[in-house]
Length: 139
Image (tube, rainbow, N blue to C red):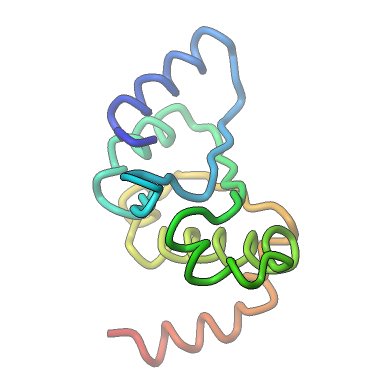
């Protein structure tokens, strides 16, 4: 997922060769020295990948990954007990999915299918707050 065009081509190859029914992606990619850079799929650089996913008409499951690099150092190093199901998984996947929604990925690819597990990673419980903020306070 470090290269959207390559990821799309590999996804197409795997779907064709192995008959897969979709893909599972970690919620984000780490890049750079010591994983200090995070790559998010809601940026236009990933449109080439999303175009292939939409064309193939299969879902992508966004799965949480443990925080690393600067995110780990800044938020979880002294709170390791919050890594995983207690907090970091839901926070990270929610950030990624809400970025995908609010940065127009579903506008550009309206047939895109994304699966979020673990009861929606807190989003269903916060839906009123999310909607209220986006409707009334968005820039």
